[in-house]
Length: 444
Image (tube, rainbow, N blue to C red):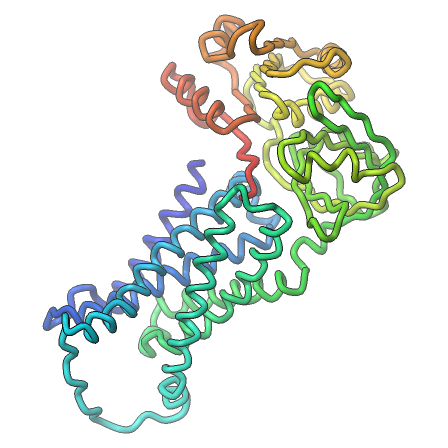
């Protein structure tokens, strides 16, 4: 999380610093309307800057993953930037529209516009001046659309397949806001660093918007496949799907995930990969739990022989560190990346000592027997805790079971709140923060 927090703060500070180098929040003379003029410019820069980076992150750029610790963290940054753009845009809108209302209500008196002096503007400036009224109208209605679409994206109860379609419309809204920004940004900014950065961000965001609208996101990382086997575990409400992939898959390491499309109307859903990669048999396995409308219907929808599209792999939850000991915590369906790593480890020789903790509220003998067999084959010590029988897992229980925990790293996948609780606990006991790894498997 440190990397995305740093990136988030750094972007806002950079935009602010460059804007302050070009303008000021303390105009002279300082009045309501003089402040409104500069604040509208500043808030506009922050809002379109944040939204532009969010648009670029929506492309799922693979080259950024190592720098931001994986696509799961990048999507968290994407969400923060979207919320920031929304909040700042609301403030921006209020200073613009609210002021007009207050003038109309007689609460404020609009100052007389000074007559223009100097040479008349020509060329691009003339065109920009002629576009101002249209740009204000376009920006206002694009703002209303953005509010609705971003709020829908934040409402978890809003169906995923509808979220995918409505969220794509944000690309159109963004392009409209780029036009609004280009016309209404002070002309003087474009010859200064703030304008150069803003132009680069809007160019990148516009390219991302066009790729989104044409369905080209992740196009170079998609591989066709066919479902070969389906195994259902009713007690766990879990479905294991084995897919054989055609040529084109670049391979993956344990802990990564992919987007899978089995129904074009539903769109692509992200699932953690539950198998090691063998280029000779080209099989890939996903384990999904019925946690929502779509995953609850998978057992009825999927059929052996059905074609699917797999996009990826993504993620940096790859178990790569220098510690001699690792502690794995796979809570509930969060056990999935560890299953892949068990299979990968069983096929190679590795000196690391591993303790795997699997707290679960549901128990299925067949699934647990397979998990135990995989752990034994991989030389991993298994700790199974069933709720209602073994009690809850916490930091004290892990430290009691693993005396050498101080020389270990922790890899967690499961409910975010549980992961944060364990992280705080171990940091409080002196474990360095860089040794605690948590996958943030939430794409909304």
